[in-house]
Image (cartoon, rainbow, N blue to C red):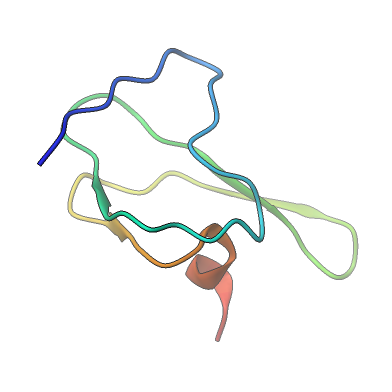
Length: 62
């Protein structure tokens, strides 16, 4: 297991990226932005128990 530290404004991934790792939010805040088909931007603020897995865009698939 590795600990990664991101500074404010740094991106973990972009929409459509294939991730080969699993990430856990240990400390701090995380914002997720996605552009919806209607052009609006959806923001979410997940809590620490949310796991980011597979790809960024999989978080918003139904």
